[in-house]
Length: 38
Image (cartoon, rainbow, N blue to C red; front, side):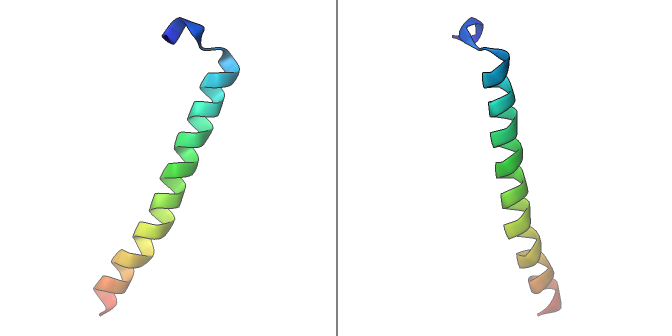
């Protein structure tokens, strides 16, 4: 399975994972700061 990966697929995977991380951080951090303020 791994040896079928092209460099483009790996880049796509990294970009997708980074986007997911950024989205979850963007959703998670405001919740935490709101909790601290309340």
